[in-house]
Image (cartoon, rainbow, N blue to C red; front, side, top):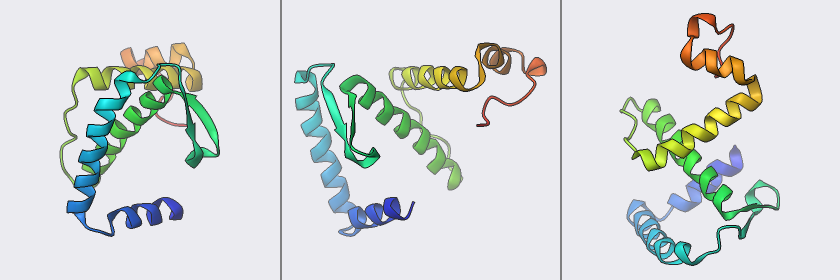
Length: 126
């Protein structure tokens, strides 16, 4: 956590205007480059310990992080969670459901989502 905090502090050191400009430049570059990248292309993820994901999985994990952390941040400062379009939230919900099934089992997830009175424990717990 200290490494993440230091990285965030370093990124923000030049002020929010510089950070906003960097984000806008990055978004513009990605809008141009991403459509030309082969879907199965491996993406090296050094920050996770020098391993790779294919492009689709990499983008899905980034989408999940964006949605989940936007909710965390909004909740922590007492603001409503930002509204994301369904094309953003649907794959995130699907991924979270698949992870919950892997962690807790199909029946528990179905009960937790549809029949909470029969769910023996929370599916949100690890």
